Image 1: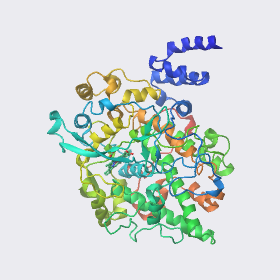
Image 2 (image 1 turned 135 degrees about the vertical axis):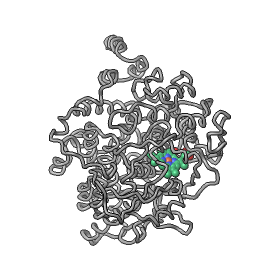
Image 3 (image 1 turned 30 degrees about the vertical axis):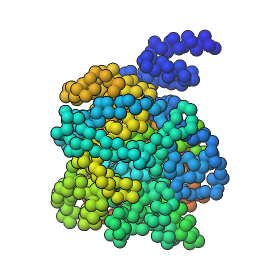
Image 4 (image 1 turned 90 degrees about the horizontal axis):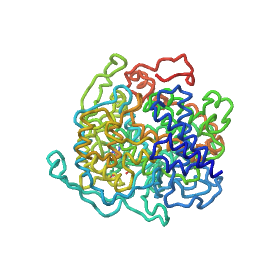
Length: 638
Ligand code: HEM
């Protein structure tokens, strides 16, 4: 056996990039073969162009390999406090008691996990200087948008999700960064202060320290409900299960002007609008359940409505938002497959969940599956979601009292600088603007593109907030801070990040981009040492797959973690049933396919009048998707 293995190893090594020899040596024989398949396809650079069915196979194999080799536990035993899931048939306020073998998993204040082993960067935290990186490679020169693909609702949506999933606990110690002379006159702040990320010992040998997530990483709607009992208390009315909302369909505010919502930190009115929409959704679910089941009390109505609303959010993200972000037939099939399985919606609606994860989908699986690692989101996940370049400089407010123009487009009314629409100031502005004008305006405006030189310069002198949504004294240079954060949190730099994800690393700048000016600037900042390239810069610079608004490198983390958010959660698997959700509740989830459906439920006239597009996440004056007579799985790449 040993000699067969060594013979195979010699054979494999001839075909496999040298950087992967060590990783492959640790794989099982079957996985080594599977890796050989994806690696060969990667060498040809053709996976996005494969026919849909082969593309799905490629992604399926990749996801399997990452589930095996890219989930690292941080600071938690594989088995913790056990409990009987029957005692908790609902999502708890702080995310506890979801995983029956590990009551704490996914709760507020637990460790971020890892997809890639940490890379200590203590001695190069400011090499190259983060303010130089931000100035020369990130700061916006001229706004580039995403055309018709992705609008400002889509940009707000992902921030809404970030506020559901992740935020880091900070230390009380401050750090100061100062702009070096070579860029100082181009930096809005010559220096800035911020709190270090709190480094917490794990008491484990392999990964000795980590950071804590102060939001519950489950897909549990915590941007609406909060991540603990104290917050939940503030947003509930304690009548008929409902949440607090203003009569104008927007969030309420406390005496200091802070919005009453699950999460209010570092937000803007795009996110508040979505929070308000999903409060309405929650309350509508409460009404529907109460009509059907008179005996349910306030607590029971709240619990069921939270389950339903969180599942609607997760579904919209999976089969609507992501499909617009990664606009190819393969990903359309893949994302629908995650929810409905390859057998599809009609089959699942008729026969229920049949087969395993592939045929029946992740949702409704008989058992949750965490692949042997307690659920958490990861540092690498945080890093690839650094997407502040989606934000423009102005919000284009539209006049919705006018008659619609071509393709249901509303006339432009006013361009409002984004800084006026963030934080406490923004909340006051939104009351003036109103829900519908805000939503229609975001719908008709494209988001920024995730590219070099497109990071909003107004975020280089941002007033950050504390967890309560109150402004801090010290302004920050956000792009420079983000570069620093990844290093401080020991997130691998771009090339090692790719390697660890079994993606072929770059060996020269030309492997990353064709843009001559970008190559020249990368050389100026990093010399010819591609290993020093910061992850955020690499993600923005990378040549994009046609139809993808994000880099392939970021996508691989999505592939793994988007599935994990569903598959590891018992409320999307073993407890995704009538008993837990109620019959009516489960029907509600099953009959909602998109954000457009949610908007139609609450603002039917707005949708009818102003939305021409199929998805609420693409620019609303784009044409509806044309019918394609070729069945999805039989399509070849466009
Ligand atoms: C006006 C809108 C926004 C503001 C004012 C804002 C502001 C901030 C601030 C101040 C931080 C903390 C930085 C730190 O101390 O490390 C942060 C973190 C972050 N933001 Fe934003 N942001 C906005 C929109 C977005 C959007 C559209 C995304 C898209 C995905 C996003 C993704 C993130 C991520 C992933 C983090 C890191 C969270 C963590 O460290 O756990 N943000 N943002």
